Image 1 (spheres, helix red, strand yellow):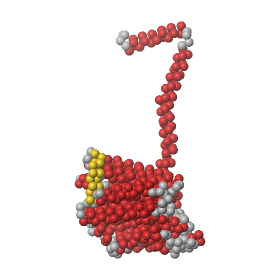
Image 2 (cartoon, helix red, strand yellow; image 1 turned 135 degrees about the vertical axis):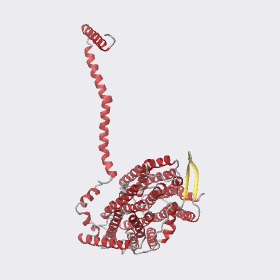
Image 3 (cartoon, rainbow, N blue to C red; image 1 turned 45 degrees about the vertical axis):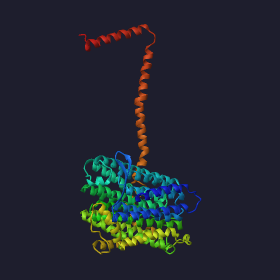
Image 4 (tube, rainbow, N blue to C red; image 1 turned 180 degrees about the vertical axis):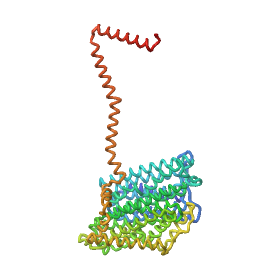
Length: 621
């Protein structure tokens, strides 16, 4: 079997096998999922090494006819993504080993293995039709993942919301791919990249449609609104795996492919991308800042970090693109770790409400340390991995000359750190409630994955040359980019600016904590309830800015209007002719009363009218 088929075929076969395992059997499903994802991880390592030191591994099989083959290609970029997806699949399979609140184990591990298979197929697809096949498969199992993670009506509603939002954006992607195939005459990405498409006419329209699909998969504004709902209505392992890791990896990977590899973007589209990134950062981080639920706060940060990645890609210069790709990996690492800490806290305390938590660091020290490392990384504190990827993005924005985007990203960093100061203080420090007197550290199966991810945050920060050398530079060469990538600690102007941002966030937290009367979970209230912001937040909390909710609220009114219009046309085409014909028939029936003189009068009147018309308009003159 071709090596690159293993991370696709093996999880698919294992997923079907999981369904055959009786629910009462203990640990069989868990061990099967962990073993299969471990094999996929090893395959990812082997595939990456092959791409780095030899020709890319390819597979080309007849499939749909008309010259459309099932084509896979493991170049440096796709191999990097395959390794990343497999890495997170493996860690989540371990994390979920003893995590009870994930729904039925059979269905959880079935969805995990299917997601691994389809995600691997999506990143390895060389043919756009094959990519669509795997991409749409992920949509189906996104629904089942959420719907089956909790036995509640809320989980089913959130699953429907996620499905409908992504279905609409995936339809845009489908139309965009179809237009590209018509214009270029091929669905093979290597062939299309040989003569990049420009932003003129139909090609520009196709790019916008494909951008919508990529941005939605990455969880960018305004397609993100299902993610905070899923944080409440689904399971922590799902959140740590799909919104935090897999979706970000796939969405940003595809965005990089189309923006750099398939299309030649112009200055206008560059501004569109950078604006989308900046708006995503600010909108989501402003919402994260005021949350008082552990998982919901993290979910908004999962959205805001996608904005940094899009901003980096949108700079269209090598250093910004490198930062976007590096941040894609870094975000998956620390965001997955943060969701794992949320799961550990919820497992031991039974809640994620920050107003009820506090003082957990002394009884959950490993979880607390992992949280602190991941929180510092996502906040861009040197010398952890998040600092270096953000620094590249900052430099990329400065090089474009559009410094407004640089300052938007810096404001995002300030609010990010302010959010995590509030979250960490409220959950792990301060006074512990008497209700949590018997709380103990999370089990080993929960601690091991988060400890590995926290270690990666440190390793990719202090040892930034490792991901630069083994992942970023090869991936950029695949995109035909060559850059001097930053690595290692260097206290330049951006570093000192980051120190100022850190100090400002700390001061803000102290002020907010003091004004709230010593309640850490209310440390954002001085901004939350500030003039204008209070009203804006109130509307946001009522889902006034949620496109899905707006559409759902408008549906009854639109349906009622359409119904009335339909009834009106029914009246014109059915009821009105019937009534007119009935009235005419009734009138004529009343005239047919059997009176001979009346009939003769009608006959004579008709003859006179006929003579008059033919005399004036006919042939008689």
